[in-house]
Image (cartoon, rainbow over all chains, first blue to last red; front, top):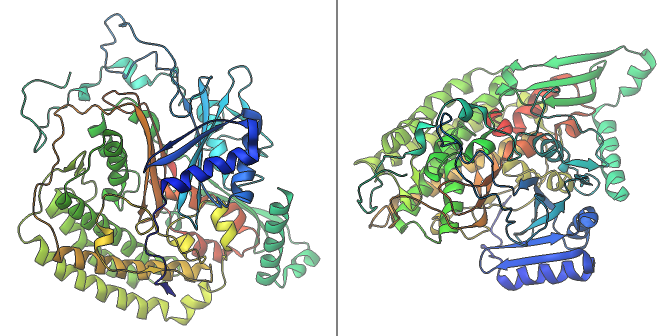
Length: 216
Length: 393
């Protein structure tokens, strides 16, 4: 029962362009932005109200049958920096402009999901904006049953609600836990009490240029 | 959307009917419902997973794993670390095959930086990757016996895994947490005598596979406990995102080592992807057994052809990764392990989404355990094969 069949058919950029075209044909206006990085990957951004419809199109019309993950990204730069500052010193100035990544966006929180085609071996990253006032999107469970736990995790970590999810209990955190840990404005308390000694990486790299001096 | 639901329901009903022909008896006897709590500390859970099952007699009517006993918040921790420091963290996700966890993260960072490790480093990476797979899955094969009441295989597994761990320790300095992979290559070259020693160990491991096959897979008790138990149809496996041997045991011919182009050396060896059409517990165990064999073959072939040259590409002393996003996943011992790395041009990642195989693999448990008998819970969990660190991250 081993397979001698396909010797690595590596997806090309034409296939990736085709994915974007296919999605545009099905979703029309709801496909807001897309990016095909040559030789790498595809990113698409859909309108928030088309989040589940995008999943349905991807699975049932375009053959993306394998569910990879659902998560979110908080694009706000952390007001605490990377935790490398001395807590006894005054806080330094930080750049707090919100810049979204590939395929653009307007909101601080964005959904991020990935589905793959098990036959064509190509994946697509799907994003959608999540508004600050009503951070709710439609649940993907009716399309991909495996989204259940991922949405529970996203709910507790980012505070994003999922309309139509049967059971949005916390999956990792205790029930009475307050706050959403993966949001950037949630401080990492260990770094609040004591400066991180590891920010200075002193191990020399083999083959690296041997300039003197610490990492910072 | 309703069509999918009803499809699952129908299959579920057929499955329950096939497995429990005397279910009606329970209804007539009006057995009392009971809640069975398995874990958090139970040998079948490989760590601290708790499973809450509601029973009707001997039959499970509802079951749910309760995770989070080992949640360490790695996704948040990566945001306050530099890229080279993250490998020390991700070592601890799947602790039985640690080196394999480092590779996709390093590959994602390299992809963003637009560099590639030199051929020698890619080759050695692949060898160490397969060695960690062998160390990981051989322990699974031994552990499988324990779940079914056979103690011998686990001693054999620990004995033979030790040889592999010695190899990994010899090359990297760490038995369980090598922290050996670097952006642009590897920390060190292979030690003297590694090639000969590895060849001898691979021979031992193939013997181990034969022994396990004779001892377990040909055993009638083992077969009757696993054949037809915990069947996962292909489409259900796919939409739950099952990966690795669990997916291939449901008949999906898909292996990320073969089916994507990565700067690794898998395509330089001749090996097979094994699948099984049945999708039951037996199929999952059997596919893993074959995979250990294939891994030893891959390692043997790669040892023949290690290219010469540097093991480290030219990388700056202070690694700053350019702004961008990258997704890299590899076929880890437990399944698809991927990192979605978002960089803002800093010393460390802005956000890392860690997609671990066990989280998806175990999310099918509430669906899968519905309607099975209590003793089968253990075999089904054992055959799904998860590592707690890989679920909770």
